[in-house]
Length: 106
Image (cartoon, rainbow, N blue to C red; front, side):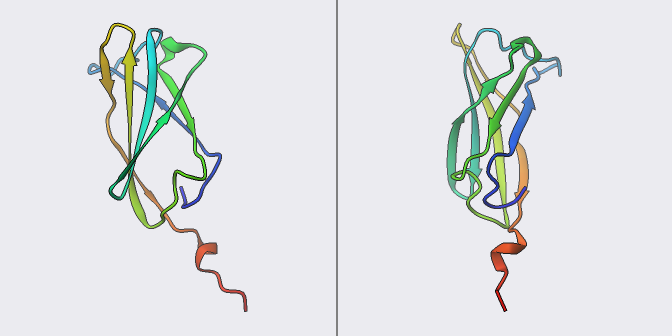
C-alpha cells in the first residue's frame, strides 16, 4: 500500500485462540485501530452479511494513510452484546511513499 491510498478495501477474518472462525453474530461494534507513528486512529468496520464468517472490512479514507515510508500497525477489536471483548492479532504493513510524491516537472 502507498501513502494517500483512498478507497482500498481492507478485509480481515477474525479467528479465535484455536484458529477457528470467530462468529460475529452478536458483535455490537468492530473497530480497526491504525497506529501511524505515535498517533492511533479508531475506525468503525463493517461486518460481512454472514456474521458467522468472521469477515470484516474497512475502506481507507483520505485521513488514514497520510504518511509514507512508515510502518503502520493494524489491529481489530470487537465488542460483543454480552460484554465480552476480542482483540485480534497485530498486522504490520509498510506504507511506501509513491513515486509521484517526489516527481518534479522538468
